[in-house]
Image 1: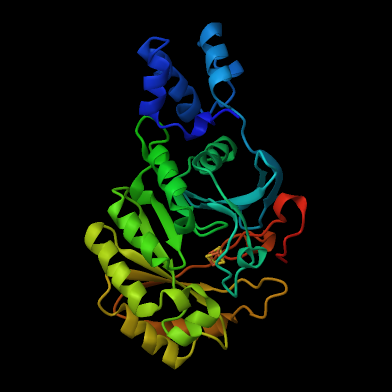
Image 2: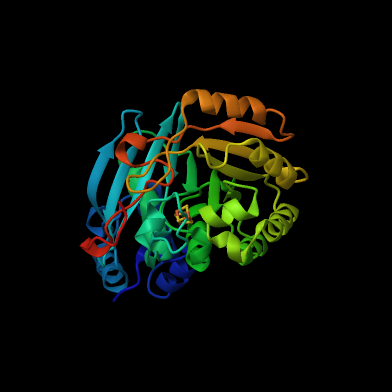
Length: 346
Ligand code: SF4
């Protein structure tokens, strides 16, 4: 099977093609793909036939197929994509004024089994290759009515469980000769894989880090997120301090609000203690119910009352309403049947 062109770093591509063609040919090819989002050599009109036939016999230009597209009332659009082996993933485009955020998947399914998450109930089908992450951004650019300004790794999967491929994809996404996407506008969200946070901090790849915290009480967090049994809060906290030391970006703590679970006085007290000396901001997100899971959405009054109490936290706090909930495209709702068999989900 040929390597996908969409996973080759520009330097490697230039070095390879430079053995057979003048240097400007690889620049032209990169410009067609990443500058114009033209992924089919047949449509690259100023390339000579011998060059086109050489690249087609050297690389795969296959793109994922868009199997389904759902538009939310709030303007978000969820895409279901079928990969070459027919594994399926989802990505979501989220417009907000002049901002257009793309939420990408890093795995088909997820092994982390967070209790509130639809993807977690699917189990892991497989991790995505670097090119399958890059292709999401290319497809989104082709299908977005406005330029994509922000990129978040908050779709299906735990990015730090697929760190090598995510880093490889990020290099292409941020490379000046490829997608040239700003690291300041790229956020990777993790459930708290401590070794992965260290490796990411040491990788030299710049990206904003968000942690799906959801509780600062070890017992409750372990119930909601089994990862906490392996990397409990004090260990996670040390990893975040390390990340902060290495990166110039503040960390974001994501906290899903689930009534009767993590919105009480002791929850806020624990959050204050956990986040006290951390340069972070905290996003509170009202839970989006998932059919089959035992958690409800909070009432607007419950959210308002909680947010008033949360004003006492020393950090910047924000109430973020997850978008696309009517199409199952909001935080924690992404789920597809893997390889056309129903692997669980809802
Ligand atoms: S919240 Fe993230 S890490 Fe947890 S199961 Fe869902 S996709 Fe996996």
